[in-house]
Image (tube, rainbow, N blue to C red; front, side, top):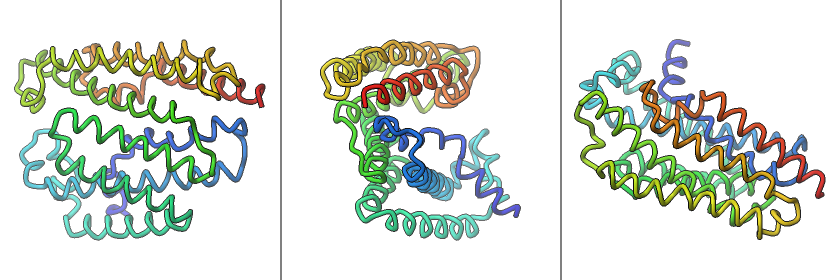
Length: 289
């Protein structure tokens, strides 16, 4: 039981909230309470959570020596020795076999998308996370694959506008996460791995470009996209606008040293904004159906 607990900690369950993205296609069907769809997407969510957790375990095994020297990461189960590398390797093998078996049982196309996600995500953690721009592009591909998996699971495609929106939003979050790390290190006057990458002003340029692009794509989707016109999704734009502004605010809020992802996951204002957006979209889709 102790080993299972340590494996769960190593899988970083606090990151799994991002995979609720697989449920997004259901929202745009106008049939939010369809039991069959909910079951399929719940299974899809669990598969992506397991794949993500498996990659976290692999990352800890590969970076074992480096993590032992890090003041924060050395407390992790693998780096601290609480969870042996042999047990971690066995655990990740079992998890991957189970996840891929379930994925291909949902359909060969769904399984292929999950395989693509796994290898893209693995390449990110093992290599691409150290390369500016490539890291953002990789994360955007990961999230788009997650959205595509949701559409395949219930055979309900979403608008290409929405897919581009998700990709650009993912890139914006990566740029803002880097900027926040830079600001926190400057505040502590401490050296950072982020200093080996782009400067603060350079990051600002990408953030200033990505933010308006995210808003523009969503507004175009809501204004001229077939779904946007049919269901009056233009009324949902204020929530997306507030969401982007909230990302900017949390990026520069240095009263806490939490990473931006954790900030967003625990921010009541962000949760309420997303909940209201979901409710409004669901109502508009239902009315227009």
